[in-house]
Amino acid sequence: TAMRPLLSSRLGPARRPSSSLQRRLARGLCSGVDTAPVLVERRGKVAVLRLNRPASLNAMTAEMGDAFAEAVGQLSADTDEVGTVVVTGAGTAFSAGGDMSFLHARG
Image (cartoon, rainbow, N blue to C red; front, side):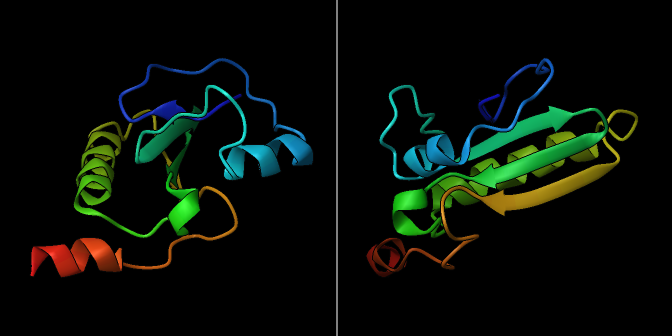
């Protein structure tokens, strides 16, 4: 099952994509790859927040930070349905930290 954009509805049963598909998704080589900065997947009481800028090793931008804060706020308000939150990154890295070009542009 593909990760859903930040405000997605509940997902059906999830299956892990093949390692080949995971590599293609991480490189953005598949059509239909979601470009939302943070993806949210729910599996029972477990929510997975995935930073979604694999080409930049998930370096944080203002847009990603805002989306992450919004997702955490939504999940925090849903304590009856969410017991655990896993934070991960798309591709080969969790996060390289702050996006230097974004930080430099902010002055």
